[in-house]
Amino acid sequence: MTEKKVDITGRYNREIQEIKYIFQDLENGRVYDITGTRGDAYLHTHVANLRKKLNDLITKVEYDKDSIDEELAAALFEARENDKF
View 1 (cartoon, rainbow, N blue to C red):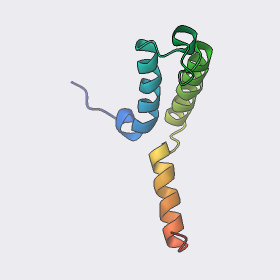
View 2: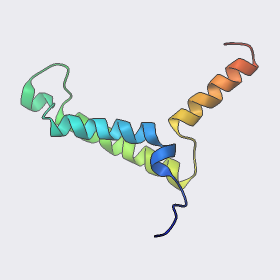
View 3: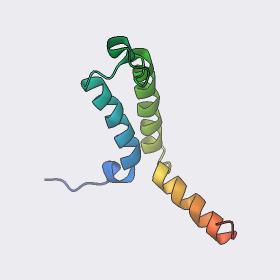
């Protein structure tokens, strides 16, 4: 078996979890159009969020951009270095 070149699921774990959460809501029928529950999003909102999150993730992978966790870690490191933390 070929060795992994890039660990996308590890590096972009938070982004992937956010996408999985939307799919889980859809699978569980947590859609305002169905439930009428105010806490549930409309179907078109779920679809728009999925489209945006998938496009953002693909862009990050294709252009080797930092993950959300990497961005947060860099911000914390910078704040600590500047004595703002």
